[in-house]
Image 1 (cartoon, one colour):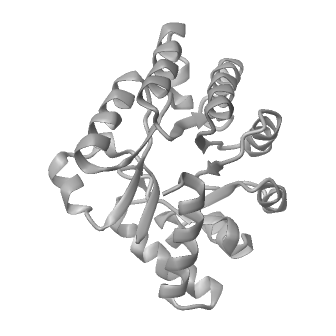
Image 2 (cartoon, rainbow, N blue to C red):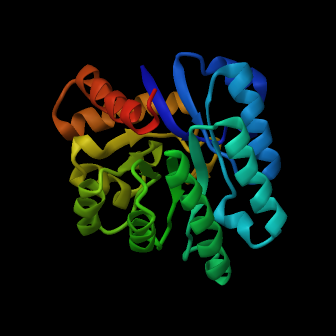
Image 3 (cartoon, rainbow, N blue to C red):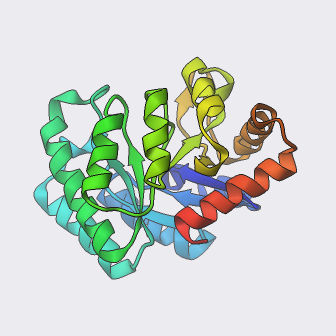
Length: 237
């Protein structure tokens, strides 16, 4: 089975979601309303729900928003926290507040043994250090374009990175795909994000799989099995 390990399912229409059958979707959330919507989609479409507050939304989030999402995670028994993390590239002005929110999510993830679906542009090392200090066991650093020399440390802690369809047009992401070991890679779409003329969506993960197979000099079938086993360990599918 192909697993899309990071998808904003709440941004797709239900007719579109129905067309993605055959792909297991790990659905991330951005705020309180989308966290609630993700739980609805988990019931209706069987997506794997990740609840959280995106770093881009932390600046406008209230303390009660954080409390509400944390409570939703506890009460719903969602298996994953996300999309959460740190972002120095796009919203550096809220970095201190992002740290506070991220720490709260990591404490909950550790307490309930949850996976964490992480956003980390230009905060790659900070995120890895925060995950290590929180003693989180399972984490995905999504759409990794960070330092290649940090990959060894990420693998050492048993964390994963995701490769997405941008690998076709983003040079650094291709370099990451080539440098990362097969044991630490999963696939994602980050749909429906638009990037350099591409509207990313789950079916494109199949194209990404073909590229990964080429890079690993293996068959698409063997690559699919490898990334599926990684995703299964990460999210306990």
